[in-house]
Image (cartoon, rainbow over the protein chains, first blue to last red):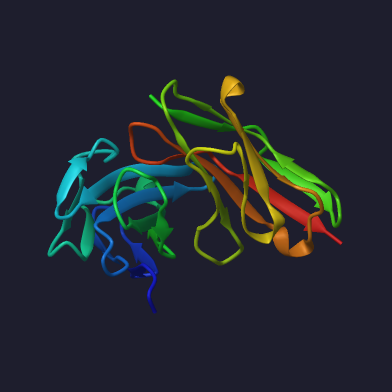
Length: 114
Length: 111
């Protein structure tokens, strides 16, 4: 399909383990965003990329969180030494360009930390 | 910092009732405004958007929203809801930061 693709759709891990979440944006979209959706908390901005660079990392909750984007396409969000409070749905979105806010979302990766 | 406030956490309506979901934002500059919808088991999708011009914007499925600059509001309306409108609705604003979302309003439409 032509939409934003995320994997895995579900991930259960043990506290202290590292996890990687992958996002494949819509082809040609230069901007890519990561959000976190927790129950009752709405969507929390984490980081965004314009091309391969990340002008705004202000939303990353701690230094255990990092993200990269290669080739102006696929992005990986890595969470090291996971904690139970990291449990959430991690959403990726892409946009033809940054600055206007119209985002196209994937279905998310649900992370459960036991 | 920008913020978005959605006043209703959960709204329950009967089919054919009218809907209005409140949204207020805090940012004094130029904004782009959005409503996104998340149907059960589906991903977030755009319902409607406001960039400039006519403050009354129409979106998909009969939804509309009105931007009132003096009130920093962008309320969502629909004259007559259907069971299929059951979903979670998110208001979002883009000022000088990436898109900021409200906490969402869950709409349940009962027959």
